Structure formats: structure tokens, C-alpha cells
Length: 97
Image 1 (cartoon, helix red, strand yellow):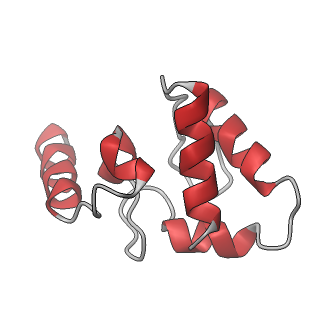
Image 2: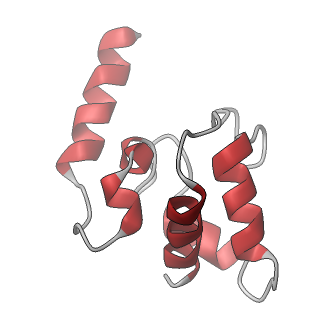
């Protein structure tokens, strides 16, 4: 199991998005990609799910800060240790996709 997880993380990091994307500077890309499912949902799917929701960015920041469970499948997203401004930038970027 540990070997499979390590391999998946390596594959995820090999496809890192450009440094201009806020999520690329954090560990987000280990479990998420823009348009490829890894462990968590594709960022484009997140953007589509919350499209038109005025509180989408606020919700995504909350998920980053507090984690979530059962929204996108069986894997839980643990809370992330990310500065508030960075979490806001990531949420804004996700919703721009």
C-alpha cells in the first residue's frame, strides 16, 4: 500500500502545473490535477460543481482549512496547513478553471 501511494504521489508531481498556479506551490498537486483524477477530484470538476455559487470560493477555503469527507468519494481530504491568503488564492484559481 505504501509503495502504491508513493508511486501515485510521484506520478502526480511529475504532472505539476505551471508555477503561476497557486496550487502548484503547495502539496495540492499530490492528490489533485487540473484535468486528471488522482486521489481527489480534478480541479476542473470542483470548479464545475460550484459554478454560479456566490460562496464557492469561501467554501473551498473552508475545505482547504478544515478538510472534508465523503463529498467526492471514499477518500477524505485532510485539513491543510496553508496561510489564509494562499488558501484564498488557490480557491480563486480553482474557480477560474
